[in-house]
Amino acid sequence: MQNKQQFPPIGWLWKEYGRALAWYSGDPVRITNAEAGQIGDRFWTTKEDIKLHVPIAADIASLSAGMIFSDSPAFTCEDERTLERIEEIFTEGGVYSTLLNAAELCSVCGGVFLKWNWDKADGRPILTAVPADCGVPKWRGNKVVEVKLWSIMREDENDGSIWRLQETYTENGHILSELHKGTMSELGDAKPLDTIPETKGILPDVNSGAGEILAFYVPNMLPNHNRPGSRFGRSDFDSLYGLMDALDEAYSAMQRETRMTKTTVIVPAEYLAKRQSIFGPNSSYTKGDQWVYANNSGAFTALDIDSGLNSNPITVVNPEMRADSRIATCDDLVKRIFSVAGYAPQSAGIDIQGSAESGTALSVRERKTIRTTEAKKTHWWHALKDIVRAMLKLDAAVFRSGVDPNAVFSVELPSNTQPDIGQLAEIIEQLERAGAVSVETKVAMLHPDWDEEKRAEEVERIRRDNGSTAQDDLEAVLNDQNPPEGNEE
Image (cartoon, rainbow, N blue to C red; front, top):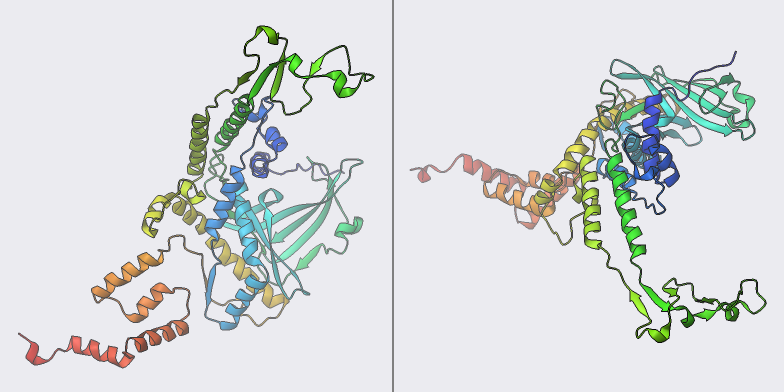
């Protein structure tokens, strides 16, 4: 009996994915197909000859990822060996770049999958980012307890069949694999994994030994505006399609006007060369005494006018282009798009010409960007805790690396609101005037990324340079607390 299971499994969601991915790709054909059937007039569905695309969707996704992971996440753990192993896997295993890639995909589709796999030859777990349109999560309460991921292994050009590998990640750490032969709209029948060479050797059921689910779904932003009750995240492009379509139309109109305002020189036909002199007397292109310009510059237009009766037979036509109004329209659309996406235009490098602002001024101008990024980081923070916990359990079960799979650890995402050095210097100076800050605190404020040992060394160097020691500081504090009796009034 043939399996008629619909694919993709959630129609409305995959329609959103397809539209978002089309704009992210920047492919005119994909954008045209995605906009076909949308309500209202769309520039990309018209028959215009000139169509320029501004890849602003890709810029938004890149900006989003860069703001979330502007730097590597920082980990702390009570168990030293466990902390070393976390940093080793994240650094040498390329996890940081995987997270940056995942954050960009998350911005596009409104969510992304991350999964752990392993190869004993690598000596460490391997983290992979999977686009949201390649899987479906299953929730129990607020927890993801199962993830199904699909990857196309082969497309048969003869009968149009599609071979898909389905991987099911369970909450007890198993990975179940199935091979399906179907079509674009059906998952199809299950086939033995060794039917095609691409999946030969894959086991149908692998127990990782981690006892934890090894695949995760990270939403971009919630709620989903089209399905508020859904747990699927919303894309950064949500509510932007009309504006992005208008931006492409505005830029295309500017290019069209550029062509229309090209300089044209109108001359009598006799000023140009005869066909015979260009193609030769025996050419099929030579018909009588027709005149033609022998240059392909397109600047000359020949008219049937008598040069002897015209005192000025050469006429230069140089139409004026309305560049200022066109550019202003495009600039406004660009700023509006970034704003609706949740970002200040300055975050994308817009309207910063000649500005040398303090960290405070920049924070005020980019407050919208910071709010949006902090909201996204909330989802990533929770996801990273689950991802690292599963990694430790997988690492302990498969590689016997000596980590404590139940060790207490913390993760901190990079801050987007760090003050610049000028701000810090001003703050420290004010605290010092008030007598409310120690040398240790000042060093910690200037170097939050240093460990305790490095900070202590810096404090000691500062004291030596200033001619004081820790004992001098202690005596000064005691004297302040117990002033001599003769000084009392």
